[in-house]
Amino acid sequence: MTEPPDRPPFLPFALPEIGEEEIAEVVDTLRSGWVTTGPKARRFETDFAAFLGDPGLHCVAVNSATAGLHLALEAVGIGPGDEVLTTTHTFTATAEVARYLGADVKLVDCDSATLNIDPAAVEAAIGPRTKALVPVHYAGLAADMPRLLQIARRHRLKVVEDAAHALPTTCGGRLVGTLDSEATVFSFYANKTITTGEGGMLVTRDAQIAARARVMRLHGISRDAFDRFSAQVPSWYYEIVAPGFKYNLTDIAAALGLHQLRRAHEFQRKRQRLAEAYHAALAGLPLHLPATAPQGEVHAWHLYVVRLADDARVARDRVIERLYAAGIGCSVHYIPLHLQPYWRDRYGLQARQFPRSQRAFERMISLPLYTRMQESDVLRVAEALRGAL
Ligand SMILES: *Cc1c(COP(=O)(O)O)cnc(C)c1O
Image (cartoon, rainbow, N blue to C red):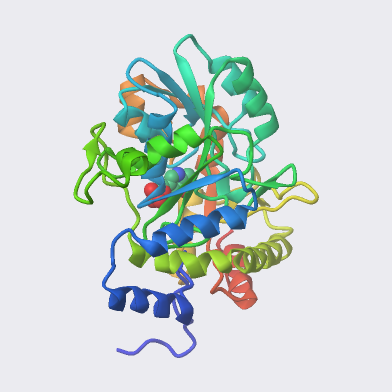
């Protein structure tokens, strides 16, 4: 049987945009004979620091944001008995890394307008064991960093930003990555705003955090011996100073990153235009549209998340089914951590402790938003949503 001729092709929820320059750079890497961490990973770090535009920054390339978050918490000294605060409204990677280190996680509710971590809930959750705070810039909109940093300073908490959605995002006119936290971690996973397939970048102003992350990124191998005695130490010599990890980024992945990074602002402008097209096309439907950035700030628009309004007459799950039936991929960001069996059972969590995240979760749908979409795709999604509602 053939498809009816008027049936439009499936519109996926997300797709990467990989150009000929990325492909040529990967081929060049493959031909060079140096495929693992080497000159291109190093150049990606230098370019990333230049992109952020702050000469005081150290950038450490890693094979995922999860790895970067783990290294950052390790480097700021998180360990058994400590407690790390983060939002329930995130992906599990944000929180799981604290557990790798034997620390506990305390989840807090989000703000109902932005879905970013609620500073008042953070302040109320701080206890004697609380050592670190991990805010997430949800969907690409900056968390309330001025207030969060103020609370953290007052209580001597380390701050590690989960910036997996936030390239490029600004807060107070400064790019996320250049704020006054201990470290910021970006993701280059396949569906993020730039991609290396898998990859991440740990960014810090603190030379000691950067040095520790570099050592722990590769088996705990210290290069200090080379630097101090480079003339005397033979090239085969190295020292293991800790039981480190295997978190280095390959040159094959970095080759993609070099060109994706150059397009990051162009990609953001495209996402911004598509988001604006959604705002216009969805106006008047029984939906809460996502929060936009304050005047003069940049929203990375990693996600476009709508929520069903009270007067919507259809359940969220049914709307998603109808969108799929219309050939449109969509998703939910996120099933909050307090509903996930591991987190719920380990900490005895209940939905009523997180009313804003819970309510948002029950009504939310993430619509397709990526640079390879056209405005006509946005109109098609809006039309399907109008029909589904
Ligand atoms: C994607 C994502 C991560 C993990 O990124 P990886 O690079 O896949 O490890 C962490 N936190 C959030 C909020 C994410 O969306």
